[in-house]
Image 1 (cartoon, rainbow, N blue to C red):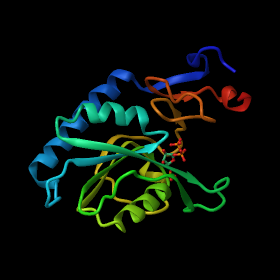
Image 2 (spheres, helix red, strand yellow):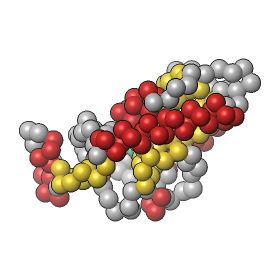
Image 3 (tube, protein in one colour):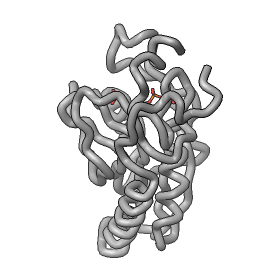
Image 4 (cartoon, rainbow, N blue to C red):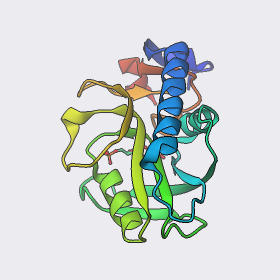
Length: 192
Ligand code: PRP
């Protein structure tokens, strides 16, 4: 195991400064949209921002602070079944604390890859009758999509074959606390 995380990193793909700039832009754009008519809750309750654990945690924390708009936040944790042999099967490990009927909901993800996780979350939350349901992801890999999912806000688009860690994204649960998004050294993937 590396003693510093940088030892395992081959190169930085998106720097902490680039992330901070883009998160500010996203926060401002989202707040402007909800001020400008995206909010559909007839009772005008605050927007509910839903972070998908664990990957979305750092992005979510920065994004909500970039939104000058009244909001509440909550979290869901989901997990793919098994080792990926059954794509599309996702189970809920932690559900929302509150009901979302009639409310405006914004899902926050760290990355959308095949789309299976998001598809399952969207289906589950849609069935609860929110007034509106939108999605914001820091990273998007549109070329890897296996199912079509609507994504309203994207921070950065990544090439298909780039496996990244950091700013919430893990390799074997490690590297989530890197302040940037980077690529692991190939030998590090074999070692750990
Ligand atoms: C990652 C990520 C998304 C999902 C995207 O979660 O946070 O939820 O995979 O992949 P997909 O589009 O192919 O479904 P992961 O299951 O690795 O859990 P984590 O957030 O706890 O790392």
